[in-house]
Length: 413
Image (cartoon, rainbow, N blue to C red):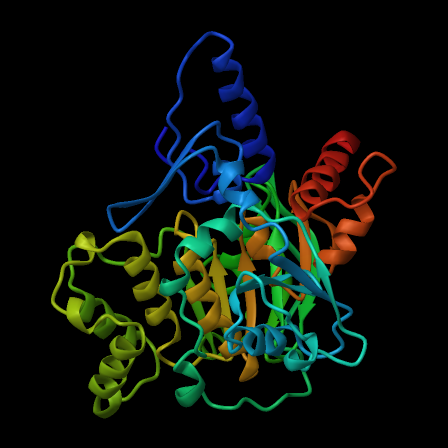
């Protein structure tokens, strides 16, 4: 099975895994290729590869156990989580760091004494040991490949000023296709410099919502406002301030990397005089210069992702829409992607993202959980987890919360 769960929601992923597990009872051997390391952790044996070389072969739990007493959560953070994350990556004793809800997860070098005060996370910040995951162990194997510096976008993205109106405001949005209601009376707003997630099962209405907000399809009822401008009244003017990175990236495979950048930069308000300079700088930042004349079809998935993000932000948008931007990419590439996104947020860009990868959803400030065209709940990742807590599972993961809350909605239907 070659990456069978790419683009599949957590409910379907869990069902798929249960189906495959049944095959073992019939003595069928399953070889499962994946970039999702939580799936690899469930396997009897794993073969971890990088750049064609074997990093590890054996029981995933044996590798994970080597990280015992080296994985920690920084909790009770009173400062900006993204700032704490960047501060953590600057420390020589920190191998890897990711955002996990309101906390920041650390993988430390062996046998070190780490002082949480160096992270400037606030006076109440605490360092709590947590159980290692297979991804922690995998990143430890690849520690020399992890980029820890801030994104070069920090130097070229303008510092945005907070406006009176919210960057994105959705009011009673409805979209019908014949008798089928894809989006059913949803409302939400996105704040200045916020990462807002749209999560839901396949077919929930996330991509349809995106397309309406980008002006690609017209709502049946309701309206959406970008920086106070109604999409109904000034569609083209409102779209100047947004960038859109679509599912499957929407690149032209028969064109070269530079031709794609030239095409997309021509769509946005970039003057002909500045176009070449902007393209060169973009290729430099995203390490695309060696591939400038390569056909896009020849690029790996990770480089296609870089190119797609590059095309979406060349005009320095105030609002960025990301539709499953890291589906199928490896953990190193995923961290590089979020390095760029966190830098843009630092500059005041507002982000709306859809994803089926729950570890990625932890980066969101708030999440709207959508199912069958309606919003079930809006809250921070930790608030969604709390809403799904039960006596049997008092500390659910975000994936547990997704499945529980989505299943409740389906049960009501």
